[in-house]
Image (spheres, rainbow, N blue to C red):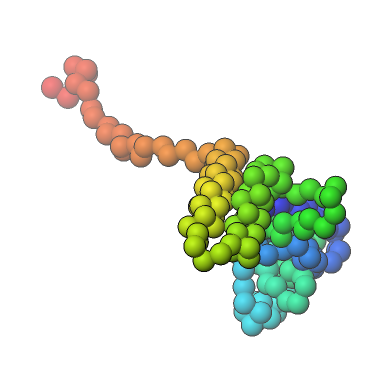
Length: 176
């Protein structure tokens, strides 16, 4: 599941943000309107001698934090977009995004594993039917997520304009 978290850093505040516990993989890190560039930890240390303070342009990950370079000198808003773990279902009243979108996916996967556990060797194809249905539902979830992502900020391809040619018009004045 894709999540965006906002961090507000006051002027002269911290030069790092804590990574959420649910993060699986980071997607974007943006400071105000500037997309930050990832640096390896070695490159971060090297560049930190050049940049002391200003608008963050780079970041690196060290332990459970993203460190910003340079440290922000003005109030800054940091947007972290990342793929998050899906909440576990532990109690009857629990819910998560998949249960809200496609509850049948859980049913098909439970039926698949129950069939493997309980089935005799005479009908192995039945488990595959459940798995195929689960894969169709998972594909529908992925397609819906791709549509939602594309609808947020659609790309517009504009044709390249040909350069304008300037021509002299013969108006009858000047040269004869």
